[in-house]
Image (cartoon, rainbow, N blue to C red; front, side, top):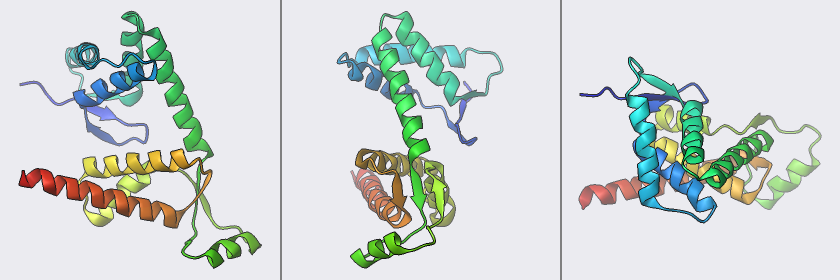
Length: 193
């Protein structure tokens, strides 16, 4: 039986290698250049997975190594534009993460917004870090890690689509609550089917 490969994420945490994530990444890259093809994505992902699992004594691989392998496979098979689109997407993601700050404020009413603008002491700020959402959901609320990672990714996507550079902590909490409720409801519905 093959050992389960572990991925070392950018934040230092590890998680199980998921072949389906590689398929999704490849298909998203192909879709970005109007060439989405599930069969091609599966074949290319199979090459990445085969390579990783056939390295002697390899138990872990960094997410950046997997990313590089995906780009190399796309380029080597004639999908250079998809590889470039993937690189561009990753760069834009890093840029948005670097530009987004979390403000330690509670915004419940219009008067809270007015107070924020009129105060001489600016609220505490922190860089955007979706790993913090994962940490809070898993340690404080006992949510399974994979569910917490999915919730954090969905919240990040919503924040970035809003194009906010300063995000009140209260907004993040509301988005996390909404996405967690949706995920848990979906999990429950799948269990009853």
